[in-house]
Amino acid sequence: MEKFKNDNTILVVDDDRSVLDSVVKLLEGANYDCIKASNATEAIDIYRSERPLVVLTDLKMEHETAGLDVLEEAKRIDPDAVILLYTGYGDVPNVVQAFKKGAFDFIQKIKTHHDVILPIERAFKFARMQKENAYLRSRLDLTEDGVFYGAVGTSQPIREVFEKAKRIAQTNATVLITGETGTGKEVLARGIHYYSPRRNESFVPVAVGTLPEQLLEDELFGHVKGSFTNATNDKAGLFEAADKGTIFLDEISEVDFDLQHKLLRVLQERKVRRIGSVKEKDIDVRVLSATNQDPDMLVKEGKMREDLFFRINVVHIHLPPLRERVDDIPVLAYYFLKKYKDSGIVQVEKISSEALLLLKQYRWPGNIRELQNVIQNMIVMAERPEIRPEDLPPKIRPKSKRVVVDATSDMDFKTAKGKLLEQFEKQYLEGLLEKYNGNITRVAEAAGLNRKTVYRLMEARNIKYRKSRRNGV
Image 1: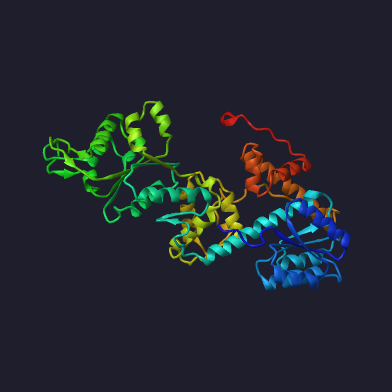
Image 2: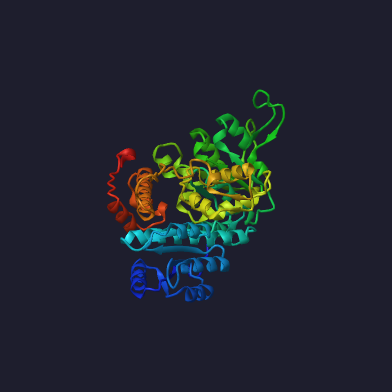
């Protein structure tokens, strides 16, 4: 995915020079690129020309609602503009009006470092997703960039896979593809065949793990009439069917150990002998294999012949799980949206930025296959042309406890909002810490924050968490 212009730039607006300088110093210390403006008119002119990704503006400047003027005009220039407002006053009517006009968030004038940095980080995360979302919507028809036959992705890990696959596709090398279930091993194998000189010949996939030994042997090698009960005719096996083309042996680790020897002879000699026959037939077949297990461990455990492993593993390609290529999730989501958008009663045209953020935060144990299923299901069940967070399956939606502030108490708006934020931050982080077993790096990635911010929030909200001993941790 391309890096968008000004994706780290924030426009800070305040008519109080000391406050403006203080906020800019704080944000620059957090590695943001800041542009200053001292009034609404200047801010609007800068926004029109520079298009910063986020705007942070004081609500009350040269007049009571100058910040709302900045908000309203920025939204007119760009409906996706991400605007935060801050003030030292508990002006509830103007705050409500700001949210109605599309403000992203509201910040009390600086109390502590994280009271400003946290909502700014959330705003940038959301703004970047909005830009990416708009970019993806504009190119639903994916070109060769990011596509390897039916495999899709633009992240660095998958680009490296595609480049390697395209290189070896032009050869006749035997390839072993490894990866978790649902990562797209057969799709990649079809791509290798498609980009090879054999593309006009047959591609024959064999799900070897679903067949018992005797039936698998018959499927692979065929038989002659009378070789066993019910063998009333000669039958060619799948190796013969793939002659001049490609055969794909999916989950080759499931092949029975005794049958592995026969398979090895075919790979070595490039000849097949049907069950019950004494004649061998020459074949010209490229062999691609796949497994969701570690082949080295299978060899060590005696479940796979070492000589067969060396024969099928001339070239090894590993497909990373979806959780290791998070940047591909929006790309894949839109790829499946295009594929299935006409399958429901309502034609779905887009996925909201909020929904895309939740899709990126989910771990996807079922990988691409699970994502495909989720998108297809939501399209079939859709009641409107946009997928929103509430349309996502419960397992993907946030599971935080409901945060409640007693509106009948004597707290003013500013105090109540501060308490609500404190409760949310505590419950949100405690939920992520539980989900990722105290792994701060994973918590930071899921929340879209840096590790320092997570530690700072944990300290501020008195969150103490120790890793459990599950999974040997």
